[in-house]
Length: 577
Image 1 (cartoon, helix red, strand yellow):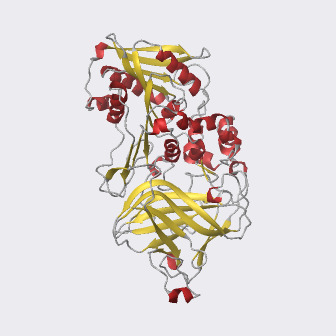
Image 2 (image 1 turned 30 degrees about the horizontal axis):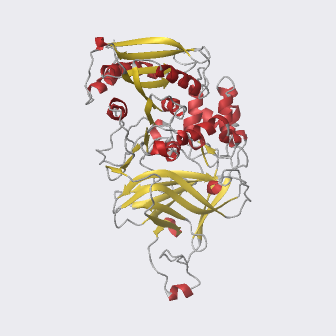
Image 3 (image 1 turned 120 degrees about the vertical axis):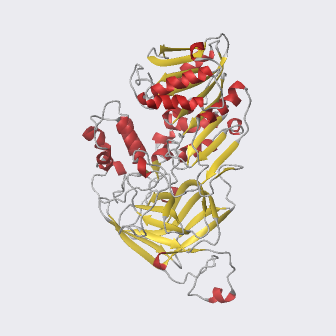
């Protein structure tokens, strides 16, 4: 007897426009302990109609015990609609033999399974489907699949692991520290927040988790994109797979999913043979494809990923054996509409620039020619912006790593589930280590499409440190909701792939970039920019010392200064239509 949760999951299939072709007693479902390439037996579920024939078959591989029952239901429901289905449990998980080592065995095990299925007469063609780690198990072999594999439907995962793990030298702890603790291959009862704060982080596994996790230590000690760890071996191979694919792939993502940046990099890297027939779809969702745009009451069209989209994709590519056309479809937050875009990366049609100024103001640049009078006035500076920048200014605050700014509203959170998305923000300057800048009301709607950047002139008395931004829309009622955040460190400033040095108390121009977003700000709203130096636990807390973050035991406070005005025009740059 199925429990209520599983019954509801099965009921979702009944709401599909794809009706059952076979009754439950007209399909067959069975399990095998399937020997993999080295003889290790992996628990594998098969389903198909009993009627003789060759069927389009959907393949899945899974490592999560909590998803097993749903996968069995999915196999049954596929079979009742005329498909075959195969769901295999990853090595060392959910009843499969062997040792669980994340990522290590999935390519060999998966390809061995596919090559076996290729030879079965009852399989006419194949598709692959999965979300999160189940999508990884597809990506990891997508360049070497046999001829019967015609397409993949992969959601909320990407192939650029460094992007999933780091932003300019700081580790995305809320996903990967939490995931490592929960997937250590043994029960771990340690408190997550205590684990994330532990210093040096490289010792947290033995100190709190019951033993070494060498793969986690590798993640947290290879901070540079240029490190050999990311540019050779497994992670390089994974990053390169999209460029070697020959089949269409449906890439599904959320604006507030922690794998978004990695997934977009992978989609952009697809080979021509794959890219010409693949789909990218991004909604206003978290990792569970749930809408998380709390400030937008008009979001009737936000939706979520539905089973129907999986069936639509495989009906076209497997049942009808058609080659799909390329499609890029994204939800525009604020406009409550889905739009098709011609390309990704999104073409930048125009930019809107807002300059930091005295008294916490953000001044919008306008197109205006500099007059002869202005050009002769050496006490003013317009710099082509139409803004009189005759006052140089700065703001200073103290950042103490022992008291980090809590994450509230973010796009690469996972364990801290309730803080994911666009959330109501606190008042301006809500902490001593947060400085806010606010614009005048917009005179018309402003639609942002693409990556937001902040160019800041900063200095610190630390040998290395972090600067963060949080950009938000302040509605006419005064409520502020975050659009995007981002950060950088002085060691990895301006996109450096390797660690740089910094001379304390010198001014550097830094660039903080966000992930892409599609967001329409309303006429009458204001733009607000918050600058700080921590965003925890979305990112690791910077210790204000030079070196590898995870190997530093002690922290020190830092005096941080942001300059703006005449000779140091700090600004926010929005890609707009």
